[in-house]
Image 1 (cartoon, helix red, strand yellow):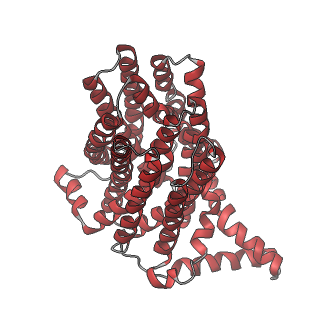
Image 2 (image 1 turned 90 degrees about the vertical axis):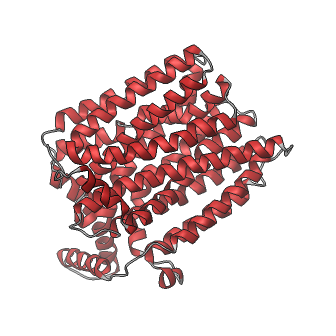
Length: 456
């Protein structure tokens, strides 16, 4: 199944150099950076303060909010932030507001001791996760709105650049966090992680400054379309009062996109799509949740982790994300999904080899490079896949819904990753073998629906 019109290599890569791609790159960075805060930084902070692997794993449940952000996506489409919307635009107003919440949360973390206030630390982490998940809805919408409806090549390139930006924010943010923490620790600061969070707050401020260079076109079409949908539902209800207006609002903004998705694909195919989306990246999530703990236990320093896992990994991710976008365009997104799934499973086995062989910098570098290569291919293919599935009438809400379901699989099930390592008595090799096997159920779902998908 061919999804895109084939292009030459030069034609495909030339679109990456448009000014809009730089803006989309920045949006991706803004979206990816908060995962550093509630992911590797929080995990290592808790680890170095003496908390158990199981506790750290269960703390990762805060990521589950990303699985449900579609529930309030319609609200973000409708509600305008007072003053900010008029000054900088609807989308940017929401992003700046959420960035401010994250910044305030980092200040709170800088004065908390997790050994005595673990519940408060997790609560602040949850606030960061909610703000980040909320801003993601707006970032995706603003990214899509940077490109015209009929600009297919630019939309595909934009998806790749968004992924590059996300990984840039995540990887380079991790480099800053780990190096800052190690420097402060070696300088003798006992609260080195708390100070590190203040350093990361500077990155938040820089992102907001950059956001002002991202254009936002103001239009009344979306608001008019929403009003028309509400009026149509009100007419079918047969009356106009507060109750019917409320029912029309909820139906038009929440139920409408869901009904449209099942109607377009049919019930069985829709369930197959949701099953695949839910399960596809579970193995990678298990690995990702515990990887930094594994690196630490096997003997790598924060500086080593920053160099190999974050710095080297970022370069690999950027290169293979762009190549992955090209591959998806030329071979078709379905084939790209199968190949990237197999790659993810195969590269997880490299970490088993590292666990069984002991500390080895060259094997660590190889494992990270190939894992990031597989993750880059898989992420580009996945973004393209769910983007092609959405109904243009409900782009933002349906995209948020599918992305949230994918996140649900990665966050809810992967929360038990630490408990699984403990159950295996710390046998990291077997743990990584299990993560490799986890991709199989999702590919079975995709195999059965591959010829029946209705992609744009």
